[in-house]
Image 1: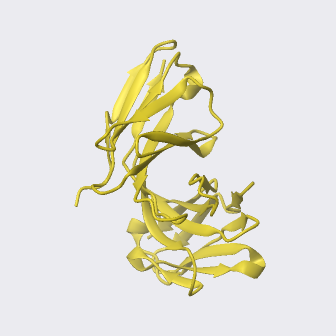
Image 2: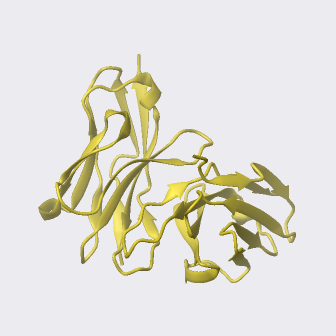
Length: 114
Length: 114
């Protein structure tokens, strides 16, 4: 069965600082990987996705993520954080079996200090 | 283009009652997914509908059911409500494309069971 681990429950960074959110997955075949962001009381917004090809993927709002098969990781990065980035971030993995269910990590809550 | 819409925004029920949640997918999307986001349990896959048929089901009891209509909108029904059913219920939609797809989420329905 597939699984996703987000080791950091809560991260605080200063505005303008760089950010890296960690995501490790467990899946035996080719994973399809996603990062979503959720503001309080809201739904999930897709930041970026990896299906195949270039292992460095660009997303919206200046985010990027790098797929590293050898480390089973898909870490999310942003060079300079803005106060509006404060939210909860979820990494998810989808299977290539046609079963379609996404498996989510437990999320990382990002707090941005002025 | 309109995103995924869900109604109602909030729903308050008492134990033992039934709840009905509704979802309209993005135009052109034929697949609808339901997820539960309960406090402490994270995001869990509930159901997947495509072309009017239930295609996959998560680890939830049968009192969680639903259907998809000819216009691809969907209903989630929760019978015999229990206190632990209190959660944010998120609907997502996608356009089926082989095994790969991207799920786009709605704002959710907050269900409170008293």
